[in-house]
Length: 156
Image (cartoon, rainbow, N blue to C red; front, side):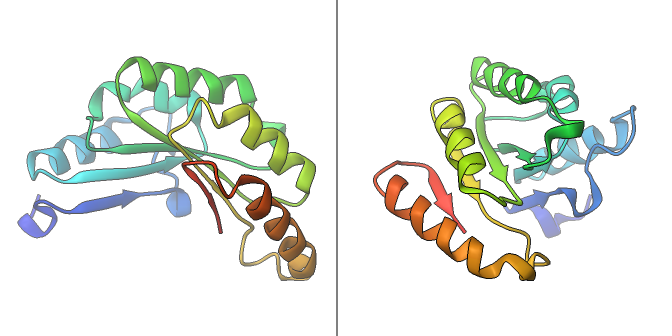
């Protein structure tokens, strides 16, 4: 791996899901090679059950995250909680990205559930959700007021 990444922070995210296949060999190879360059990894996946399987490849300088959408049809919140628990047991820093947020109730319930489990929670809406911009502004203002004193909660 080129020294381009030496001592850098590198984002591995789900624009192209970093855990796309059952076999995570390529992803773990990249993580391991980045660590050889002393790089820190900011990681985000939609698959918490798969993150758990590769936790041993991360270290204390990394920030490992899971995306939780309002449509949880393909995701079980218990797998998210399990990922956070196992990461914490391995002394790894975690974050949860709540996006897209379409309703205030979803955001509040997820923040309240996860704020003691994750080191950081990022809350936002997809930029492509332009049709609900006014609704999002109202939700964002309410969340900002409610959680402004909470450490680790970032409202986009």
